[in-house]
Length: 294
Image (cartoon, rainbow, N blue to C red):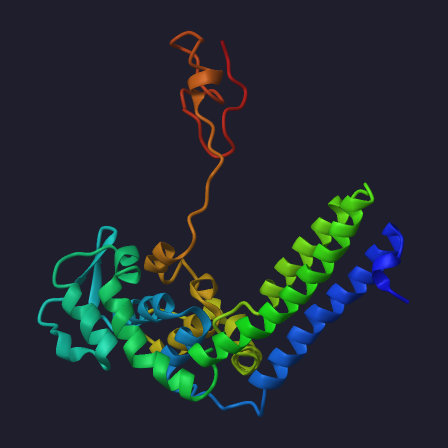
């Protein structure tokens, strides 16, 4: 039976199955090409792990954290600067040495993490080993992904275009079919996303399971005592897993959070000079403006 002769609802059901099959085929081909036996990523080098998880930015953040914990960098207000009598040669790798060199003058931690120079050094140091281990997608892998997804999308678009032409000629609605074609095309592209390979995702998942106990006792970590454990914690789980109370400078690496603070300007500002929020002559605090007198 010619599927293009199916009525609208039946053809949409057929197209949905075709779209799901195309997406599934791209997913299966990706897993077959990028899978394989899990590789034991050296847990002695947290920089490789950080780069695998989050790229050059995460490697630089880890370097800054390690150098602060090793007392090679110190905080001056909200900025980091190299300690007295510390030189770039005290760094244990190219990235650490470059960070120490850049911190000759006080620099905000966030500016270090986004420094193009430092990110390029991290990329040069850690991307090649991960590519050799097939944990990151190289140009050939990305091209294969695009070709497979492109073939699937072309098939979906051609089938949809033929039916749309028939529908327009017969004065039938085609908007749902256009939405289906767009949706499955986007879903196909979503399937091939990611800088890590399937094997890389599996290795990173194994690492999170391996070091889950370390994350559970993260609050027990103290500065300048177990830099190795701190480095592994941040490498595998990111800055969000590092306790801010013990390592306050890591706050600069976390996404900015908006606090819903209420001022007294609108609630109390129109009252007399003796008025206050919450009484006692105190201004807004804690839970906001409460009990504004007049």
